[in-house]
Image 1 (cartoon, each protein chain N blue to C red):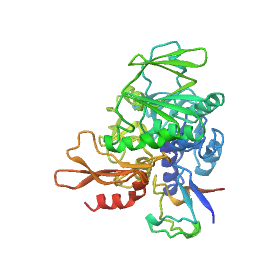
Image 2 (cartoon, each protein chain N blue to C red):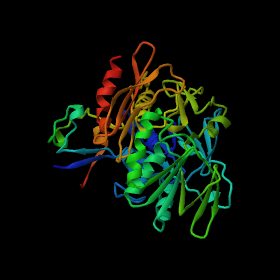
Image 3 (cartoon, each protein chain N blue to C red):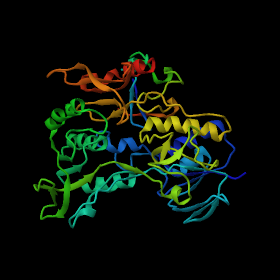
Length: 383
Length: 54
């Protein structure tokens, strides 16, 4: 029997294999990884300092142990160069591999802004454990860190770094934190609690250039001001890895296009995780990966399963002012309404997004209201 | 009372605190948390948690 071949050993690939092995111990599985294949929790990268973990202790289970536990063959440090769909064969840096069914769990690349300056390539981004190891080595000898991007990952890193004693400046061309996920009255709730811990916010400006200076780096911003810093971290979003699929002439859009069975337009090729666009949605969060992996495991085990996503709130790990949000599509019809607002003693805000029928479709909970996530999900589910 | 951590997302389950929002009373030992319980933050199964030292 030809193996199920899974490309990628991130959360998507490993969760799928774990779920598949609960249903089927026999079908041979081969996993292919660009890195060592060690299993770690990606969400923990942006609060590892608070968890007192580093790149070594973040590894939950070494790759060899995973392979033994879940009974698969691992090809680590292996690049996949192409998919021959006719022959059902992969071309890799370790030679040709045949597949029966193929799962693309390739992940996403951090978006790199086109920056000018002689130190543009010294800007770090953390998208995997190797990137995190590099980042942790770099912060040992610095005090000030500039973060490009005030979204979820930028805010989580900012909170983790100020907690650990760093001076952090967050630079973002929008008007307030988490602007991609929520309206202004909610996002701005983060301003004061994080500023109190030592975050300097610079909204409405972007970084034009990064140059080396005598003490570290000099950033030139779009308002022509400059900012001195010791280290620059970029956190401006992710781009699904679709090139391999595109080259194999699978349908791609923002991500690799798959249906509710996680199946591409090739009946034997599937995709999930950050590289996938499932029924029109790219959902680069943990909870959707878990649901998609469970559904795909059942499909691969021969069941007629389909993924059904419940209301999946996203938790932003900013302990200075915790946030939970059930985002709505950018073009969703309706309006945000304030349901409750805190005060100086118990800061925070509760917002709901209501459609034309006055049904709640999304919410934001910050600060004192962050704990009401389950009640809000229940309200949405009974709509 | 022990503390457990989700290996997928880092969510902490503290036996002393329980998880009242999911109907798990404070003081509920990990062994008594139902097998069908999933991580409230990421949906990982109970079997995917591990114990960590506080």
